[in-house]
Amino acid sequence: MQGGAVTLAEQARALPARPDLILASDMVNLPAFLGLARDFLVGVAAVLYCHENQLTYLFPPGQKRDLTYGMINWLSMLAAERVLFNSQYHLEEWFEELPRLLKHFPDYGHVQRIAEVRARAHVLPVGCDLRRFDLLPAPCSLLPAPPLILWNQRWEYDKDPQTFFRALYALAEEGVNFRVALAGKSYRQSAPEFEEARQRLGARVVHFGYAGAREYGALLRRADVVVSTALHEFFGVAVVEAIYCGCFPILPRRLVYPEVVPPAYHESCLYGDFEGLVARLRWALANPEQAHTVAAALRPVAARFDWAELGPRYDQVLESVCCQYRQRIADSTRGFATV
Image (cartoon, rainbow, N blue to C red):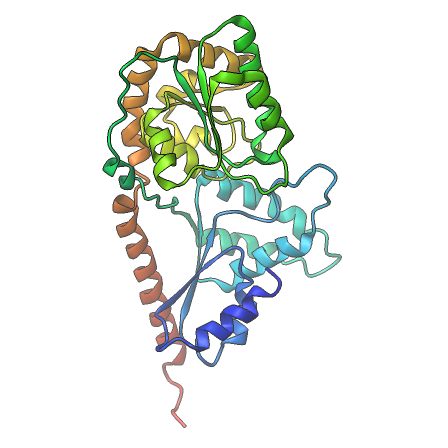
C-alpha cells in the first residue's frame, strides 16, 4: 500500500493506449497513483473497489493498528469518482468507523466530506467464477458414508478455527458420526490447532491441507455441510462457493452472513453462540435429507454472485461512471478559450 502506486504508475505509462477508466482495489494508494501518472491519465475516471478496509480489518492479538493505512483508504475514496463495496455490511461498517479516524486530527478533520463520499458509495458484490464447478463430474459413492463437514477457509486467526474444532470435538465426544475435510491455505509456518485436530479426529479427517483447483471442486461437490466461525468477513467467497455446490451452511449470525443468507433461512443456518453452532451441526448431521433440501433451495441464492449475473452489472456501473465523468469534464471546460 505504500510503494505499489509507484510500480503501478510505471506500468500504466507502458500501456499501448490510454485506458477509459481505472478500477483500483483498496490496497492501492489511488491519489498517489493518479498523481504519479497524471500526464498519461489526464481525463481518465477512477473507481475504487473496497474488498477489505484498514479501519476494521481484524489484526492478530497484540498487534496495533497503523492508522496510516486507514488514511490511504480514505484519501483514495476522496480521489475516486465512485466507491464500491462488496457488501452492505462492509459499507456500513466503514462509514461507522470513519469519523473515529478523522477525529484523531486536532483540526481540519474533514468530517464534513463523509456525506459527500457516502453519496457516491454503492454495493457491488464480488463476481465469483461459480459455473466452473458445473463442469466437474458429479460425486459418486458406492457405499454409504457419514456426512462430510467442510472447512474451506484460510487457516488464520480471523477465521477462528479453534471454535470450529471445539464444536467438532464436542460432537465426537457425543458419538456423532461425521467426516471432516480441512482445506485451505495457511500463511504460517505451522498451524498447531489444525495439527491437533488431525490427531484428535483421526480417521474422520478425509482431507488435510491446501487443495488444488480440481481437488477443491471435488471436495465442494462431496461435502454436506460447510461451517464458518469467522470473526471477520466482508463477503465470503469460500462460503458462497460451497453453498453453490450444495453444502448446507452453518454460519455466524453477524458480519456479512445475514446478508448472504435470506431471512427465511436465518434460524436454520445462522447461530448466535457456541451452543447454537453445535446444535445446528448436530441437526444437520442427524437430518441429512432435510439439510440437503435447504441446501438445494439456497443454491440459487449463491448463483446470483456468478460472473454471468454480475458481469453486466459491472459493465453498467463502470460505463455510467465514464459517461458522467466525461460530461463533468466537458461542462467544466466549456467557455474556456483554447490557447
